[in-house]
Image (tube, rainbow, N blue to C red; front, side, top):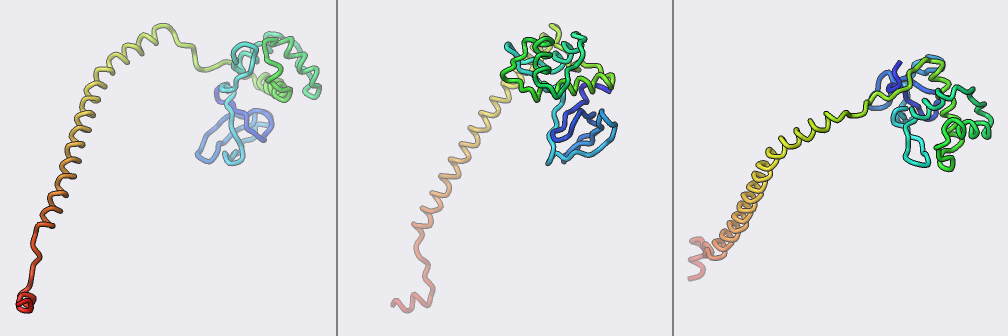
Length: 198
């Protein structure tokens, strides 16, 4: 089981492994009782554990950093029913956490989730690796190659708009000539009308 496939589902306790996603929801497997069920996206919201960040006194950190600090501390997890014990635990394990913005209910979830991850032997790590120095250089080279291709496209776009403006001007002039022709044309008379007028 991989950490990047784990999600929290609103309204359902515990963590879930994402089996398959659909337009109207997802098929998930509970890590607690191993049951598989369909969770509708109309009722539930899905949060990937990799995307969850925690407020700190500095920059926000990923949940993985907090879990790794909890693992490194090696202390027993506090009782989730005791708010003071939970807050004291996180003050000891991760003192940089912003305790004014991270609620006790969020800390309880972190303790429960960490316990579930430990029981299921899930390796807690992010799948996206930090970029090396070689990769940005390659991206810059690709950008430099694509820029000349964009310039002719911009010219052709300008030419197209110029040609479109000329066509629009011709269309505007053409109806004006037709209306002038219509106004200048004499009214047709029929033979019966001609006889009556005389």
